[in-house]
Image (cartoon, rainbow, N blue to C red; front, side):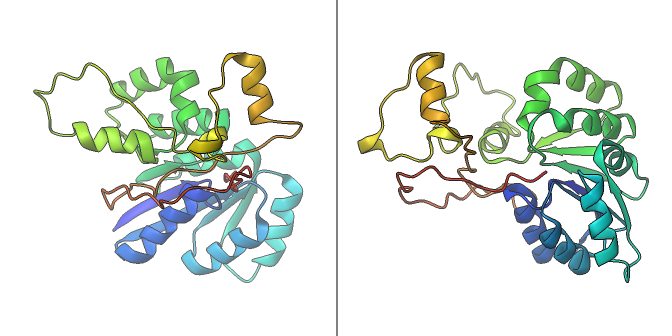
Amino acid sequence: MKRVALLGCTGSIGTQTLEIVREQKDIEIVALAAGTNISLLEKQIREFQPRLAVLWAEKDAADLKERVKDLSVTVLSGMEGLLEIAVMPESEILVTAIVGMLGIRPTIAAIEAGKKIALANKETLVTAGHIIMPLAEKYHVPILPVDSEHSAIFQSLHGERGNQIHKILLTASGGPFRGGCLASSQLVHGKENYHRFCHNGEQGTGGHGGKMAFWRGIVSDSGGCPSPERHSLDGGI
């Protein structure tokens, strides 16, 4: 039985992780963390019966604690809660699917505690890769990419020691450009145009271009041409 702690359980990657848990039957969820989606987290707690649950805001955590007072789950909040999940002795694997640089400290703590890292949070490596990778090597901790693009690359290269890779091309399957079809899109050059395209007066969030590749070992696209309107997803914590 694999024991997994999941950060970002109400976002796209998090909910797909839980779909896999339902299918596999040999994975136990020992902890869940979300941002603001109290109702969905409550449903997940009742289904998966974790020992620990975390919401970012203290008031939201207090609300959740009242809702699940009939269950034997500890409810915490903020970064302290995330760090508690990262090092809890009951878990073997930390899935980090939270948005932005919030994932750095829990990832470091989990590595130092000897947990395997299933990483969907790209910002952790983009901003702190010079810290994370040497630390993982020091503690002999594997970092497994689980989001669509970098998981696809990982799987393509897995076991191919003799390959001489000179260049990897990634299609723009997600992010701020997802909202337009090829026929209506234009190339965006420079910081000013990028800002206008991405924000247009309000902050938008891009979705994931493919189905998460986790223990399944596959990547399957949803396919189809998206609506010209910006596409928004709950990105988790």
